[in-house]
Structure formats: C-alpha cells, structure tokens
Amino acid sequence: MKRDFAALQNQHFDLLVCGGGIYGAWTAYDAALRGLKVAIVEQNDWAHATSSASSKLIHGGLRYLETYDFKLVSKSLKERKMLLHAAPHRVWPLRFGVPVYAHQRMNRLQLKLGLTLYDFLAGDTDPHMRHHYLNRQQFTAHFPLLNENALKGGFTYADAQTDDARLVWELIAGALNAGANCINYCKLIQLLETNGKADGAIIRDQLTQTQQKINAKQIVITTGQWLANETPSSEWCRLSKGVHLVMPAVLKDEALLLTARSDGRVFFLIPWYGLTLLCTTDTDFKGNTEQISVDDSDIDYLLAAANDYLKTPWTKSDIIGYFAGIRVFKLNMHLPSSDSPSAMSRDWELKSTSNGVHYAIGGKITSSRQDAAQIVDTVCSQLGVSQPCATEGKLFPWTPREDFSAWFAHMQSRAMQLGIDAESTKWLLRRHGTQTTEIFRGIETQAGLAQRIIPSLPLIEADLMYCAISEMVVHLDDLLRRRLPLLILARLTENQIRQIALRVASVMNWDKTQLQQEVEHCCRQWIMH
View (tube, helix red, strand yellow):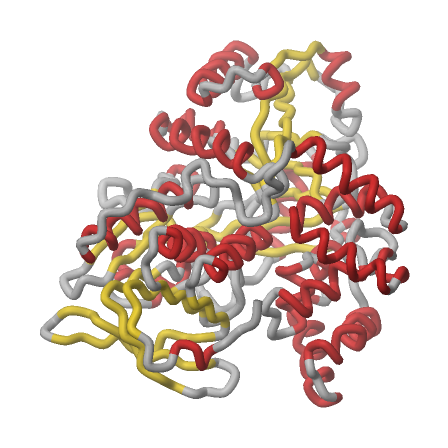
C-alpha cells in the first residue's frame, strides 16, 4: 500500500474527504464500499492527532449516565457490541474495576443502579459482559495495587479496548482495497466553487510542494481540531485537551475507573502493551492546535489523583512517556462557556454550508462508524445514489473469516515455532489480524526478525520492517509513534532511535542526510526532557 499523489491528477471524484483521522477513515471506507469514487487526503500522517491520542477505549461511557446522556450511551454500547463481533483482533473486551470507599461521592447503591442501567442499555446477554460486585477481600485480590484504607469492596463491569492508530490505518487500508485514493501528507489549500457550489479543491503534496486541482461532486471536512482555525467551522467548536501518562505496569488484564478526590472527575488506569495508561485530563484548550504540550500542571493533576488510591505512590521519575490530544465538542449555545469540558456532550453533528460542503463536528471513536454512515448517507442523497450503509456488521478487512478463537490458537502455535514470545504474539495478532501471515513469512526468511525491538516491549523486529515497507510510512515518527507506539512506550535514547532508523533506512530509501533529519526530528518531538 504505497502513497501515490500522482494518482489524483486529472481525476473526477464523487467524494473528497479532507482529514485522515477516525472520522475521515470511516467515511472514506464506507463511501468506497458503497461504490462511490473516493479520495481522502490528510495533511500529516494518518491518525496524526487526536485519533492516535485517545484513551484507547471502545466504550459506552459509564460516566455519561450522570449527565443523563442515555441516547449517546445506548448508541455507543450498541456499536461496542458490533465491533467486538466484526473485529475481534482490533477490539477486545476489557473489564474495569470501580472501588467503593467509605465517604466517596457515589455510594454502592448509586453505582449499582448505574451499572445495572449500563448493562440494560448494552442489551448484551453474555454474562461475561455484565457487572459483578466483589467484597473487600475479592476486590483487593483483583487490584492489589489499591490502598485498602476505608475500602468496602467494588464492582467490575465490561467495556472494550482498541489500538486507535491501528484502527485508523486498517480502515484506510480497507478504503484503498475498495478503490479509494488515500494520500497522506497532502494538504487542502483551497476549495473551488462554480455558481456558489463547491466542486473541487486545490491540494498540495507536502513532500514535493506540488499543487494540483482535484474535482469532486461532494466534499466532507473531517479535520478535527483544525476546524477551530477555519471559517465557518470555528463557530461550532469547543476544544478540550486530554493528557495521558504512560506508567509502569501495575495491572494485569483489568482496568480501573476512579474518581479524582480533588474535583470529582473520572480518570482511568488502563493496561496497555504491558504498561499502564494513566488518563485523562479534561481542560479547555485555546492555544495553537499545531503545538499540543503536556504541562507540569497536567502531570501533577494525574499523579495526585492516582496517588490518592495507590499503595505505592508514583513520582515524575516513574513516567515512561506521555501524549496529549485535543477533543472537539460541538458548541452548545445553551450551556455557559464557563461550564467544565467534562459537562460537554460527546455527541456529534454534521453541518452543511450554503456551498454544499459538509463538516463533521464532535463525536468519539466508539460511535465514529455510525456517524460516518450518516455522513455518507447525506453525500449519497446529494448525489442521487441509493446505497445503504456498507459497514454495519461487516467484518473488518483483517478479521479472520474462520472461528476467531481457533484462528488465534493456530497463529499462536505458528508464532511459537518461529520463536516469537507469547506476549509479543498476542499484540502482533491484535495489531495485524490476518496480515500477520505476511509478517511470519519475513521471519521464515530471517529468523532474527522474531526478536523484540526493545527487550521490555512486546513488539518485534519483523513488525517494524513490515510496517516500514507496507504501511505508507513517510517519516520516522509515522513508524515509531503511530504504526508502532514505541516513542510513547519506552524512554528511547537518541542512539536507540538512530539504530532503529538505520535498520529501516534502506527500505525507506533514506540517504545519510535524510536519516539524520528524521532522527533529529524524532528526538526533538519525543525524547522526554
């Protein structure tokens, strides 16, 4: 799957999608499956911004029940169930613990009622997906990291987890296979109109600075945080920053939903590639959308919130990595702007302007497919095309077509024969699904590729090489942040980054000068100071 900017030349498209995050990816994939001629362009890399900086959850949003957002929770839980079936390699169950302490904001009865409603809205008869109460001793056995003072017991309930950047890439790969033209590092410069209606755009190749015209009957803007910089979309958006810290492993295969004692906000501890995600903040953002930083105040807030619960407190020296993302909320004119971002609706809206351009505002990863289906419905209606949504219930591009458990067991056995350790195998299968067969072929020709890239992380050399060759990587941080999350999961040194860059330089066609530039950029952006 190669990047081909020249393929856009002199083409006439039914749909141009601008923005290569989760909303753009689902829109392009669905539209291509419905038979539309589609182009999607992204000014940076796929999932460059918020769509690779989420909490990695596919969830209904238990906390949204407090704001009575039952419609959004029900919609998200329906989607969670569908995705668990359609993409078991990409979306997998994750149980959460919710401790009950004496004198906390929500007591056992309130939590019980909320979780019962959550299960009811999910409509899932699988007992493994329903909530359970554990007494103090049982809950401590599940979560020995927690301080036991005033602990009365707790609940566990089910949601699901994904790898957000991998999710976006699989959908882009699916769109490509369905005939869409998908180009990263391609920027929208100007919309073109005829008689007041948008019918094309000027786009620029960010690598060569070449500009060209592209013709499109319909245009959808799914640029997320960049909507806040443009007219007219800036009037519809409110931005909020969410910060995530990568911490040492303290969990096994279950997560925790906790409440910050300082302000009552919900935060999470989530197992992730053998480490722990501590997330997330929720603060208004009015800065430069090109420069999203993790501030000391963000770090202090999350560490203090977690340390209120941990037997062994964390310090800043325990932080392995961090990242921040900007959420876009649709602006509610009826809510005071002073209201906390936590009070803002996570729901989504499609705005269409007088020139016929469509803008996707707000939303969340879990419900993005349903929202994208509405976008494509609107586009099809404008085009006079009668084709229903093509993605609901459809198996993902890399989902095995046989029984998933049997496939997983077979692939585990094959991986063991090739010398891949068990934990790396689990993540390899989650990351690549049926594409893992191609990675195995690489190891068959070069046995050393079965080894881990970094001894502490379950990511292997063959995965690195496959991504570099096959997954439209342009820059080193495309590879080490989004195709594989190495830059946030390890405190890499400049020398380690250089050694990895040297291993992929030949397949990336980098000369010494470009290799040095790539290493320097990665170090500037990602080495913790």
